[in-house]
Image 1 (cartoon, rainbow, N blue to C red):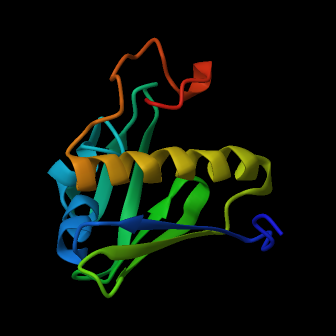
Image 2: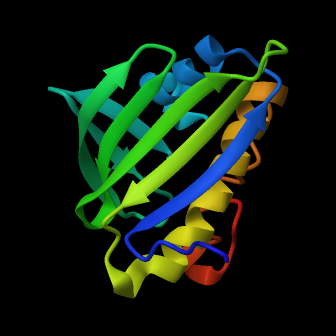
Length: 146
């Protein structure tokens, strides 16, 4: 069954890159800005996200275990957890869970994570930014590559 737990959104993604490289994109301002938001600067233990459509979010970093786990408070006060595991061949398996997403936002957040995760893969494994950085073509207008 697709997304069977109504309280948690879960996705998995495989990278050809090692865990340290994937973690660097999650844990640094520069890394997050390459796939997640136009800007994602950490200040005083919280990340100030700025998105192309003008939305902002300040999410507290709740836990970080280098090269293994990164947890942040995200939109709607959900708890987003990225867990990284070696794939046995030099790559990484990432598991994402986003817990306590408000029911009204669930469908959009399920789709949103697919967009974000595929942008992460493109940035990490291929050094490509899939986003167009155009404020007139955002998620709100149906564009997935923002």
